[in-house]
Structure formats: structure tokens, C-alpha cells
Image (cartoon, rainbow, N blue to C red):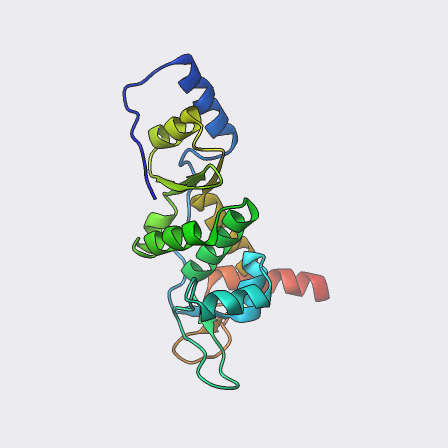
Length: 202
């Protein structure tokens, strides 16, 4: 993981790079809401929200790439529980894999992201040239990487956050303290899902 700073540089190429970054939604203008901290999600829900297969989820958990932070599986019949943050990272891993980034680079990126606070993640854009992964926390850094050719593609974590949030609004969660299904009248995201289900079945 690396970043570069480009404050004070204003060139025609930089203007084009800035415009390109804006079109991709990489310039830190995404507002996010805090995830519920007392809700966990089972493996199938995590897979659906992250857009991955259960085989990928299981392999990444067993190899330590992305492990469930709410509850690990212990023996036959026990269920892993993933947090919102875990699912966000799972979706980022899937995006990086799809663009050809090596598993070694992805491991480095995941380790780096896990050191960040959950709200800090929404303010990060990951850029890559398909070989290395760069963390950007300002528009200047994004523009510099695009201008220098290192940023062939970018993943704005704030946008991924919103996608995961939208997916989880349609999917079941569990209270981490009781293992009971989440009451949709308590959590607004689940209330939204409850209304959608009622509309479909009513």
C-alpha cells in the first residue's frame, strides 16, 4: 500500500485526471450512516451482500484473508457471524480479484484496512494498476495516481459501503448478544426491508 501527495500541482493533465476521477465517483463526496454494531450476518447473507460464492467465503475464512469478527465457526452446526465491516471488506476483495490484483497484494490491502476505524473506511479510495494497490484519502492523491498512470481503476469505499447497506436492508441479520433475528421495528434498515417484504406479499 502506498500513497502520493500532489498538492499545488496544476497541469492540463491534472485537470483531465481530476475530471476522470469525478466521473468515476472517486472524489470523497459520499455520505454514509453508521452501521448497527450489535447485528451480525450469517454466511449466506454475507455472500449475497458481497456478491461472492460460499466456497470463496469459506476459503477466505479458513486462510485468514477475511475472518468473521462477530463469531467464528466452532465445530459442526455452528454458524459464522460477519459484521457490516467484514462484508464491506469481502466486497472490496471481490472487486480487487475481478480486476486481476494478486492475492498477495489483496492480503496486504486487507491487513491495512483492518487497522482502520470502521468510519475511516468510508473515506478511503483504493486505486490499482492491476499490480499494486494504493490507498488514497484525498482527492489530490487520487488525481496524482490517475495522472501518473498508477490508477487504472479505483474503488471508492464510501460507494461500496452504500451498496452493502442497500443489500443488507433486504437480508436477515441477527442480534449478536442473543442470536435472535433482528426486530425490524428497532433497526431502520430492517424496517425498510420489512416494508418491502410486506409490499411484495401483501
